Amino acid sequence: MEMGKSTMFFNQAKKVIPGGVSSPVRAFGSVEDSPPFIVKAKGPYVWDCDGNQYLDFVGSWGTAILGHAPDSVIAAVQNACTNGFSFGASHPGESELAGLIIAAFPSIEKVRFVNSGTEACMTAIRLARGYTGKDKIAKFTGHYHGHSDSLLVKGGSGLLTHAVPDSVGVPKSFVEQTLTLPFNNFEALEELFKKHAKSLSAVILEPIAANCGFVRPKEGFLERLKSLCSKNDTLLIFDEVITGFRVAYGGVQNSLNIKPDLTILGKVIGGGFPLAALCGKAEIMDYLAPNGPVYQAGTLSGNPIAVAAGIKTLKTLAEMKPYKSLHSLTQFLTKELHALGNKYNIPIQVDCEGALFGYFFAPEKITSYEQLTFCDKKLFQRFFSESINQSIYLAPSLYEAGFISTCHLEEHIEKALQVFDKVLKKIS
Image 1 (cartoon, rainbow, N blue to C red):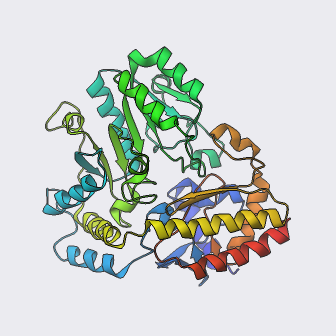
Image 2: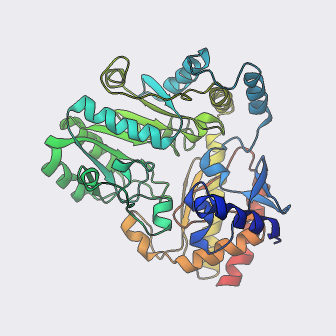
């Protein structure tokens, strides 16, 4: 495909922006390619500055569950804009959006809006320490909770892509307070609480890991984690920035009937605008200022434009009830992709839930970060490059999940599968 202008813009960007990007995975480093510069997105498609149209399975990294720029959300945003872009003050929309979130998640009683998942996770850790009086936290290898110092240890997402599991600039003292353990490992989980229960303020995780591909929890694992946290006065924090309102209207926790103490939400709740939330039990949330001693603040928190987009998005999802059909569509995609792998003798492990899916070029099912070494990175690179050259836009990293929207139809999935058939035949 013609990428002349995109390459030009990328070269220009590298002169004024570190790496030419505002977030590392956008550099396409793991696929050894030059990224397209996107100038338009609508429905299930995106267009780059060279005029190339792509069928999009990235969806602004999970944000665009209604597809890009849905007309109803555009109207809500335009209406909100006429009243001002930012107040730096409370407004009625915050309570309305919080009410929609509380109604969807039985574990949530109060909501504090922030601007990003990173900010929400950072605040959750501070809140957990303040509430419990304990200092240590635990996270799972490969799970990504933003780039705050306490959580930038054995992370997923862009960190895995660039083979930098820890970042320089993080003080050793922060790392010492963060314990890591492998996901889906019952023995390690028991050992964690046996050794550290008295000093462990919280355990944070993605209930379905979606920043190191798509990794589902083993049966009983989340239930055992919840039990151990409850018995040892340790807060359980579900990071549902990706899975919240994407795998189900009430997230993974609603599907599995597990109530965490705190929940992190983002992406979908902003309807395409920067918005995230720290949510949880009222008793814990009231430790936040101004009610309590745990400080958090933000000038743009609860921005009225983002809130208006979020309200319209969640109301639309509540009315549409699309999750059964979305899951059927992702199942169709993943099952057929697996079948194509068998057809060309290429092992592909696939899984999906709701409007979220993942695939690995690996000989066996992936259940933890530690197994990712078995994935064929070179094969993924070839699969990605051939697919994007044929107008299918996938995440440019082996360690990212894929997304569909309510704008994706069966005909779009069939088109993608036709491309994947040609690509797999070529690279087999």
